[in-house]
Amino acid sequence: MKASRIAVVGALAGTAVLALSAPALAHVTVQPEGTAAKGGYAVVGFKVPNERDDASTTKLEVNFPTDHPLASVMPQPVPGWTAKVTKSKLDKPLEMHGEQITEAVTKVTWTADGKGIEPGYFQKFPVSVGALPEDTDQLVFKAIQTYSNKDVVRWIEVPQEGQEEPESPAPVLQLSAAEGDGHGASDAKAGDDTEAAAQNTAADSSADSSDSTDTTARVLGVVGIVVGAAGVAYGVLAGRRRGTGASA
Image (cartoon, rainbow, N blue to C red):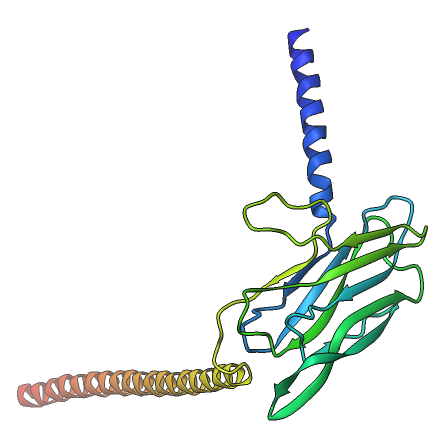
């Protein structure tokens, strides 16, 4: 009986843990593909799980930060979805590649062409963004998720450091330290890869040359042994013939 009670208590505790952790797993989040360095460009993906058992996600609206506007925002095509980019005038123009930018993307809306994100599935929505600001450590993207049954979930609460995570947290992109000038970092990496490839090629050539030299040495060594053995045999045979002649 005691063992049965312990089993029941354990099962209830496990169910409670799953119930408490499930909402945390259903948040709309944003993560970079690689790094999101200050001053550079990055591809970020908005991950949208379906938290309903009886409805599909048919629409996602992501609001881009207006306190740190991004001059370049380009969504990647997602099969089964249509993306709409909304731009707005900036209170303070941005400078990008020597040009004044007077408007920036403030919202991207994805609408499902078919069933959308069905129960038990999730979808990623990749976006190329830049140049990332250099005067902040994070960017907050407030998102609105709409379901086929007209339910709307607003992921707009900004997490505060040192406090518990809010019930409906907004996606937050953490920025890493600056890497060169963004584009230059990629070029430098490409140059490093090219130099490394050249060094590897030289090393391979050197190794091939060394292997060839070793093989030649082995062949010459074997030939020398054969010739030496033949000479010894010839000498012995010649000695026997001379000995036979002297006896006669």
